[in-house]
Length: 286
Image (cartoon, rainbow, N blue to C red; front, side, top):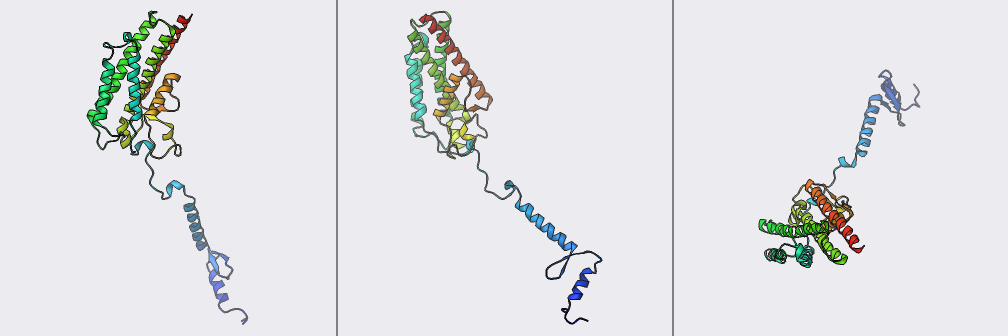
């Protein structure tokens, strides 16, 4: 026996090779690693790599935020809707009596009384209540219906005059009358959009509806607006204005059936008014 060989070294090598060829490569220390141990080590490392490469969605994250239309907000201020209603009442008084329901002042006076009632029953600056009032909701919808009725009557009378070659004595008066009817039409439909989208301003502030009726750009992507953003009346007024001029939705898409039908009706009314008035005005000027 060679005494220079470290004791026990031959025993380790022989025991590692006693498996009949099932041994793996030896480590730098001279100890052989079996094929089974090498396979187990490889599997453990592959499992670790799979865990590191898992998609982010499978990793534990913070709870998802609800969509923009499901978040409760402070509620919008009411001054914009109030001022616009007063403008609509003034436009109705501007129209000649032959185009309005007699007596000429009855519907504008009724609308003013209903608006005063809304302010008296709910004097808060913002339209957000802990519980919704059916009386206030009915009164608000009645006000919008009265404005729509008065303007619809005036639009029908104006179209009849234009078709029968009657109407205003000059082009300037005709354009002024038609402009008042067109502007009131925009205001009336803006009020309908504002009152019906997701149940109205109070329901929108509470975030009770599962799905929106109008999809605004700020609701489609994070970073375009603050997290607590919600459409206000001026946003719906813009939708009504662009629909009355372009005869189609622009940046805000209607999603529900009633929203599509209402926008289609507004486009038809606006298109008929504009075409007939322009044709009649050109005829008068010639």
